[in-house]
Image (cartoon, rainbow, N blue to C red; front, side, top):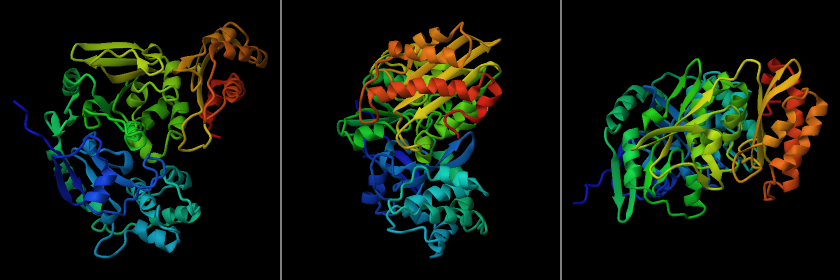
Amino acid sequence: MPQPNGSISFILNDREVSLSDIAPTATLLDYLRLERRLTGTKEGCAEGDCGACTVLVGRIAGGRLVYESVNACIRFLGSLQATHVVTVEHLAKDGTLHPVQQAMVDFHGSQCGFCTPGFVMSLYGLWLGNDSPDRADIEKALQGNLCRCTGYEPIVRAAEAAAETRPSEIFDPITRERETITIRLKALTPAETITVRQGEHCLIVPANGEGLATALADNPGATVVAGSTDVGLWVTKQMRPINPVIFINGIAELQQVEETADGLTIGAGVSYSMAYDALSRTFPGLGALINRIGGEQVRNMGTIGGNIANGSPIGDSPPPLIVLDATVTLRSTMGRRTLPLETFFIAYGKQDRKPGEFVESIFVPRLPADDLFAAYKISKRRDEDISALLGAFRISVDNGVVRSARIAFGGMAATPKRATSVEAALIGKPWSEETVLAAQAAFETDYQPLTDWRATSDYRMLAAKNLLMRFFLECGGEPAQLVRYAAGER
């Protein structure tokens, strides 16, 4: 007997929406523009790169309501259960512009105007969460918004002015409704798995980890979607079928970061933004690296667990996590098992994940006080770009001699891969420029990188060798100096 069809329920601006006839691939952008005629949200790139489609999505996290900027073009409707979607149309009140909108007018922040609603929503997210942003905060908030008219300076000035304008709480739509929205979203939080069918298509929203394990056991070929920063492009650019789909971004137990004396346990559903404080505090080099992963919208959606689970050879988080000796815990209806992250990656497109298993968490041990650590991202564009290669280094030096070394790269092989020959060339040798120069030749034993549109094989090889020398020069044998440099902060 067929099960009754469920529905996805969320709040759109000030109205509750319940959808029971939606495809797993239906995007928030198409729904806003085509179904609701909220055309302030634009389609620019359809791949989460330009920010013209930026909206805010509010959700309950850690018992409180938080709002984050996201890319509507790659955000699926099935991922919106118990959320509050806010579009640019919701900001003005009775014909009076919101301070962020008014500042964009006053400082001529809009030129052709196409990208303006996306900029407004990114700045609105900053306005909500930071009363006194500095220029670095503003630029970080706008990393995921592109302006072809090169109007960035007026937009930054508008952001600075808006930050100083704080009318009564009654004016701002989110501030005045925060308590009510919180109650409404808690009421929408599912206690059981939601299943929505449209013909042969099916989307599943588990309420918890147990429900996820059951859903995967029942649908072994299902596509698991957390942040959709990767899967979204499968749909919008490659037109790939992903049916059935299991959306896991609402599972609270997968969105926790636990700090202990031994290290950090990061739930697979923890986004880059959620992990930032803990990671940057514990491993300063990782904080700087996260700031270069996508734009703010991508960091708000993308998850560390997803970056690991998809097994991409150019994923940014695996190389540094490998050198930090991280482990990954997999879960299924049969139980859990934990393995070194390094061994999780078997070959291109293949990971050590049995049918029905999903990545549940990642554990990262604390770094010994005397170990040197850094991660370096090489890309064509500094911000919001995919890595050509990414190198991570961890060296322990005792009395001027290298006692241990762990080096890993992404973008140099079919999987994130250790440079074991380079490590062997360093261990037991003086931590010196001569040792590093001699060890550079071992890269050619460890890697045979490919040539593609991001970089040539020769470039990747030369860059990898140079990064080892950079690591040596920047740390200078003194671990305290390294904090200033990691992940290309300078």
